[in-house]
Image 1 (cartoon, rainbow, N blue to C red):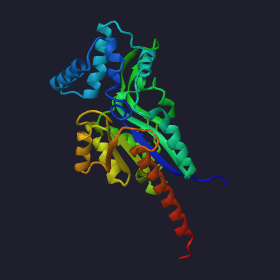
Image 2 (cartoon, rainbow, N blue to C red; image 1 turned 45 degrees about the vertical axis):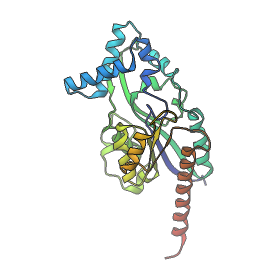
Image 3 (cartoon, rainbow, N blue to C red; image 1 turned 60 degrees about the vertical axis):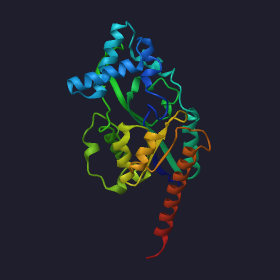
Image 4 (cartoon, one colour; image 1 turned 180 degrees about the horizontal axis):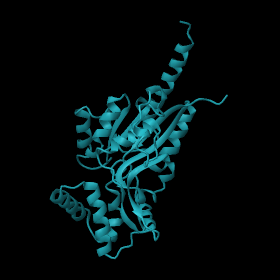
Length: 282
């Protein structure tokens, strides 16, 4: 009989969580000769002026500024930008190591991205194949591979929708029925208490709270070096929004590594206890 593994999901933000800064700042903005301060300042101004969704505004501005700068923005051009992103220490090796550790303990660990950043840029990173599902803002492309319209805008409140999709196994974004169906807790693909959410910023607060309130583990990470880097993350901790705040260091035996392995151990032990209890005659 095939071994039955305990399902576990680790959902991650990207910008400031798996890599420093915003993903557009590594290559895309230099390509259009804009500084991060100028670009995001204009996004903020337009968002306020038009009372618009900030994610839709930045996606539109990317295309507008790229056109003005005669910078190519086909799908492959976005992907090329992703190849230049410098990830936090230990990130490239993290996924295989944690997945294998889970397997050794009888836990099936799956990794999910839930990000307001660009799915097309993320696709160029070396870690993209490690994810079961990627929920990130993305464009619709024409037959020439050029972006024509936003296909998906993931903002701070809609992020929680994707946690429910993970919870219920409803990964088809064109299907709004499955994610809203009433499914008994025991029949859900990955219970919230078997879920971890790792993020760094204000856009992650709804996800932090949802996972924490439903019995999962919420972790705030911060840039390992820099004056005051931990202030924001510790603010989330002090406000009761997360369980812990640790540096964004993904190497073996780091704080984050030990916490996730301990969580895997806990889920494995809980499953063993449940199995033993069910075998005891009533």
